[in-house]
Image (cartoon, rainbow, N blue to C red; front, side):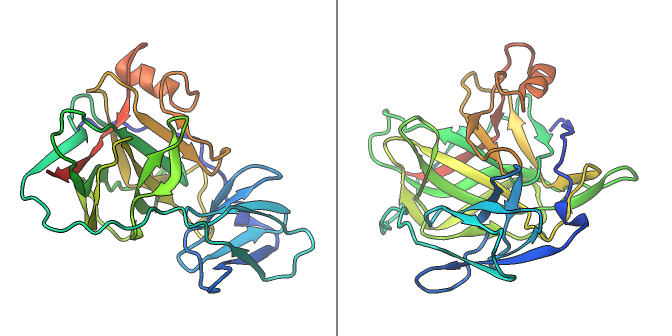
Length: 300
């Protein structure tokens, strides 16, 4: 794989100075921690994730936040007069599909998606970025296949004298498209798949699902989140590891991205997106197409 480093402007950590608020995000019904909830700073932009215990450290300058997690209703919170520590309760949204038990999975396996290595290169992500690749349903399939694994290409990187490395947690999910064709908040998985920062990546990564899921006729998004909790300071001299591989082997633009340091809105990753336009032109030319190099293993 051709190594190509995309340098991006990283959000300077706000934790460098000033007093901090400690925030705990919990389930309103059980009062259990809500892991890896997204915290957006609604009054000044930016944001980060809570950790696996639902804990985050917020600078005192942050007065209003929007807290969200895929299994819960989003909540706006005014922190201006809040005591320290702050407990934020999220209400379960029940937006995961009912689990379908798949038995007698066929031994016939096939890989689908955008897996060809032509023009592939490793992208160094921004902090707390989400990627999503759409995999359409093939009407030529004679019977409904089930998804058994998520496939992606990730590589660890090392720092140097100029740039240090911050290791990110990686979360994998499968989601339905919304009515506008973007990734929705409806997850197909009844399990939470989060790889720790200590995970070693060597390229091809197959994430085996404990419970295979039927391939939805409307197609499915592979969603890959880079999660950096607030306790991990990141500045412009840091690189995020692992890199994620993209490919230029397919003519259709099927990849989307969003980031907590922006407005957390899904945008198609194409030459019209200011965040990616220069990279796409540099690697693939003026009319080039770039997609996440990822896919699924299905049984049929």
